[in-house]
Length: 244
Image (cartoon, rainbow, N blue to C red; front, side, top):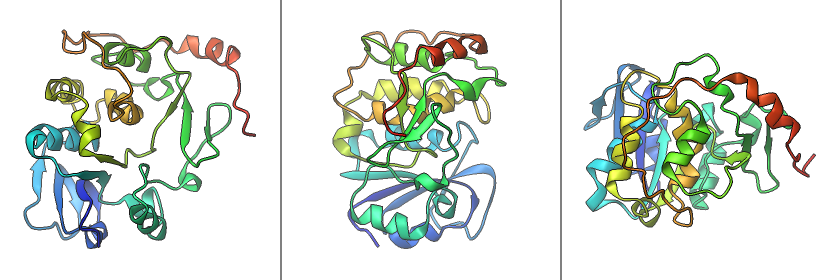
């Protein structure tokens, strides 16, 4: 059991075996969930935004009293995203990402696992091909609204499943208004596709070295789903990773 890391847990299906590794936690259970043995003092929340919605609620509601370290995760992280043995090891090492590369489905050059074991995916918004977004019709549009980039990244580094360990400092590098803006982009329906943008941006959101856009708090643009036709061109212009 870890007394050092606070667990923010989003639950929808599965059990709560993860709680044996935490004495300090907050469990958010989505409405309509099919979980086993719901823990005491858990909170029922709307079923918006996959697990990201619970993460943002926790940050906003506890912004002035955040734990020193927080693991944002799902109740069923193992075996869905990693083995229990791997979870225990990464927790003991204070790893940032919590997933097993062998649990990921990927195909070069669309995605690959880097030499340090992190997951990288081409930035082409393929996951919203058949989904209508209310805001930000592509990941690039989302990134441009939130951050200052000279050039948008061609690959996005993130933990598949959105299980990430961050420090209080990482969270506080953004003002609370930023997180309030983020939650507005996903709280309009169950499984809002903008949630995929937030998941892929977690490492940027919690990175003090990435500058926030000066206009992040302006009106969120209503956009149409990104045309899928531009992806082939993006691939053709791509410099493939050296790792083969």
